[in-house]
Length: 271
Ligand SMILES: Nc1ncnc2c1ncn2[C@@H]1O[C@H](COP(=O)(O)OP(=O)(O)OP(=O)(O)O)[C@@H](O)[C@H]1O
Ligand SMILES: [Mg+2]
Ligand SMILES: [Zn+2]
Image (cartoon, rainbow, N blue to C red; front, side):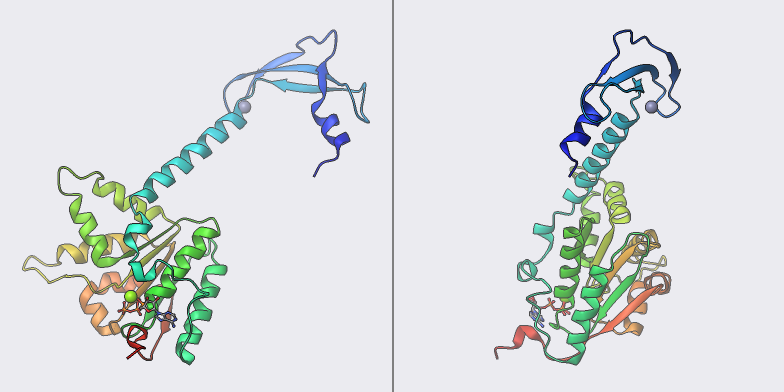
């Protein structure tokens, strides 16, 4: 908090009675003409003292306008991936707090996921892959990472790969609200992308080489180099390589921490 005196010193000023324009120049930042006047402090400890004031520079206005525009564009991109519609109902409430580890491997997974989210920094990109059989909370922890990074002020998209690929396919429909380019650039620009259930997509090889899914996935993963991406899968590394192809697999594993989980399916715990 600034003291009242400080505020007075800074803001309660007037031009001197004979305040003439001393000189003018063109601001290099904004290109506007800036006029230089003598101002005098009316109140505060510096009362009576004069100083030089520069009027007409629009650099700050331009900076604010650009910032607003950027936020607007970012929001527009994220709306395409409306998290309420993409996260399964059973994961809507998932958080680190309601994840109850059932053994050593899930305990370690929770700690690693929490650390990943709390150490998240844009310019220190790290990837993580949660690996293990059904119902161990891989998606639960990945969704929690997404929520935590968002509440720390970053952008994040959580989406299952099969859903993502059908979303991209749907843009080929002429009536589609978004274009493929819009979706792809959102996936590339988001701070933290969660690709849930990678390898679960239909990606049968075609006679003419790579399937559409395999090459689309490569495009996405390749666009994430140097950014944060979190994956979940219940495939083994061999199965995953076969499914997504060696090029995607190699990039996916670059700078990537593998979190292996084992245990009982939490979904069946009441039986
Ligand atoms: N340790 C846990 N504590 C609390 N809830 C859990 C735990 N493990 C799983 N769950 C809950 O069980 C359900 C299944 O978990 P989740 O979808 O995360 O499993 P998964 O490992 O991703 O399984 P799959 O391989 O089938 O995708 C979710 O509703 C999740 O919130
Ligand atoms: Mg899952
Ligand atoms: Zn300027």
